Structure formats: structure tokens, C-alpha cells
Amino acid sequence: MARANEAVLSSGTGVAAPSSGKRVPLISVSALLCTVTIAVNFMLGPLLPLMQSQFSIDVSAATWVLTAMLLGSGAGFVLIPRLQDIVDDRTMLLWSGVLLTAGALIPAVADTYPALLVGSAMLGFGSAAQILPVGFLRRRLSGPSVATAVSVLIMATGTGVVVGMVGGGLTVKYLSLSTFFYLLAAAFAATTAALLAVVPHSRPASSSRIGVWGTAWMIAWVTLVLLAMAQISDWGNVCYLLLAVGVTAGVAWVLAQRRSAAPVFDLAMLKRPYTTTACVASFLFGAVDAAFILLVSYYTQTPSEVGYGFGTDALGTSLLMLPFALTMFISGKAAEHVVQQGRPGAVLAVGAALCGLGLVWLAFAHDHTWQYLVGSALVGLGSRAGYSGSFAIPQLVVDEEQAGMAAGIPATAMMIGAAFGSAVTTTVLSLAYIPEVPGVPQSHLYTVGYLIAAAFPAGILAATALSSTRHPGAFKALMKQGT
Image (cartoon, rainbow, N blue to C red; front, side):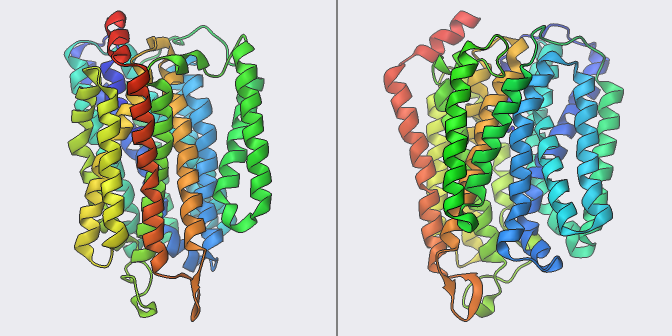
């Protein structure tokens, strides 16, 4: 989900550009890593109905697969970017590759629901490796190589979403679910081998140390928040208690980090123009994506005999959402260019407006195939632009030794936002079931779900307007100081 790697790279200066003969393989393996790790985040959603049928579980149990991935991702996006700044790149690539490969092999070999949950959590944690190219390419590229890397990573990001959405559905249509995970494990193993063969040895980018207690504390409160929001429709009041504990622990963590000699994240960067707004936007764009994917997946895979739905399979759903992925190729580079001009507010606002338009469209037009193609294109176009802005903004105001840290803050916000969007959507779809078909939501709830999801981009517009009013021209001035 680190969809703004290209903007991140453009802000770097490069300190040890490799020879031209090594730049191509370095950029190529970086693109491969982005493709396979981003694909993981989009593979399991369309497969949930299939998993529900194969393991004889209900909707709540099926959503635990996504919950496990979200919990793992939350921990991964906290820890992996921070470790990258203080551990050499090859070590982090190896650890991440081993974790991803093992995460795919466990459900492939065991082929049980508990194994699926464990594997999903490991895949979620390892998927945070999508951020690693931000650091090692920023430190190794300079001049024209940066522009080349930008273009390649834009393509890799979009390709990852396409592979994630279509690849999973295509595989399970003709092969088994366990075979799908075996293929996934092979892809991770091959990617890790390629990275270790190409990425050179290096020293740590930062001499600072990581605060173990602060890191464990952050992972704990983020996990509580993610768990509470993901299970709120099933656990009820217990989740409100977990959420209260998690938020309280989070506030206490922020206060402690401000006095810590070895903070997990330098929270002072949030005071810089648009940085807090970027994190809020990342949270809300994450909520948009999660709500969109769940609403489309469950509506389209509902058997038409109940009075609505297409009765399609995972592949059919993926194809309907394909414009969501393909439009990312269009908006990514344009968004990066606008941010580099010192206009981050424009990127966030336009991205939010397009997402809102797509969600409102789908609220009232989701009965025919062509309507999903239009809605998916609008949401994808806006989401891609928005992520480019929200990930690029922190990178443009920090030094390169903090590249991992600056990527980790919006990434963590994004994962919490995805859990929030998933929780809200699941709650809405659980409000009323068709009397004759228990467990199947009434059709009008999809309209309600899309309209509620449209409130997320509205929040981005409000936050962007507030930042533009409070800090007019401040972001561009800060960029000029950096140059």
C-alpha cells in the first residue's frame, strides 16, 4: 500500500549512485519487491467468500482473515521502516523475505482455517517491506536515475494492485486455494533471492538506536485499536473497551515519546506544514479502500437468487475492480509532479473529490457491470493521487536518514484507517439481513455503506482546507529551504 514511493524518491539527493550497469537491476528488483508486497494487500479481499465456503465458516470468521492481516501490517509498518534506518538494507530484505515466504507456506501446507489466520498475520507483517525501496534507492540513486526509478515504481505499484486483484481470483478459479499459497511462497522466495543478489552491502543509514520499550508499546496500542475496530460488529461493547484502552495507551505513548531519548518516530515532524494533514489523509484513504473493496466483493458475489447481486466468483469481482488498479497508472506521476511543485493540498483535495464522486456514484448505481467499471475507475484515480500526496509530504521535509521513519508514520495511519473502514462497513452490512436468507445483508444497506464511505473523503477535504488556511505557502517555502 505504499503507493507514493515515486514521490519519496524524488525528494532524495542520493549519496552513492551505482554505476549505470548496476542501476537497472537495482531498480528492477525494487519494482519486483513493490509488486509482490503490494499485491498481498489486495489478494485476500476477493477470496473471502471462497474461504468462507471452503472452511465452512461464517462472515465474521472470514473477516478475521483480513483482521489478522491488518494486525500484522500494523506491527510491520511500525517496526520495519524504523529498523531499516538502523539496520543494513540486505538484512531487512532477508528477514522480510523469510517472513513472507513462511506466511504463504503455512496455509499452503496445513490448509486449515487456523493456519490461514497465522499465515495472514505473517503476510501482513511482511508486506510492510514494500517501503524498503524508499530507503535504499533514495540513498543510492542520483540524477537521471531518480526519474527512471520514479516511472518504474509507478508501474510496479499499479501492477501490484492488478496482480493482487486478478491473480488470486484467476489462480483459485482453476487451481486450489492451497496451490495459490504455494505459488505465492515461490514468488516471495524468488524475489528475496533476486534482491540479495543485486542490493549491495551497506552500512546503517542512522547511528541512532531503536527504543525497544517504545516500539513494543506502540505495536500494542496500535494492535488494540485495530482489533477493536475490526471486530466491533461481533464483540460489541468489549470492542469499545478495547478501543478506549488502545486510544488511552496511544495518548500516553505520544507523551512518553516526546521525552524519550530514543523515540520510535520523531513526532516533531508532525508540526511541519501539511504533515499531520498527510497522516489524516492516509488514514481516511485507507478507510476508503477497505470500504470499497468489501462492498464490491460481497455485493457482486451474492447469488442473484436472493434478489440482488451478480453471483460472480473471486475472479469476476477482481475484473470489475480492475479499473481501480489501472487508473493508478494515470494519476500517480501527475500527483507526484504537483507535490514537487509545492502544492500538496491540491493533490489531496483532488484525490478526495474523485473518491467521493466514485462512492456516491456506486451508492445509487451498483446494479450493472458497467456501473462498477465507472465507479472503480473514479475511486482508483482519486486513491492513487491521494496516497502519492500523503506519503510524499513527510519525505519532503526530512533528511534521508529518516526516510524509513517518515514512511512509517503515514503507513501506520493507513493501516488503522483500513481497519476503521472495514469495521464501519461490516457494521453497516450487519444491521439487517434478508429474513429468508440469514447472514445476507438487505440490499439497501449497500447504498448506506457507500454513502457512509463517502464521508471519509469529505473529511480529507476539510483537513486540507484547514491546513491551507493555517499555513498558506508554508510547505513550498520549507521545500525551498531544503534545496
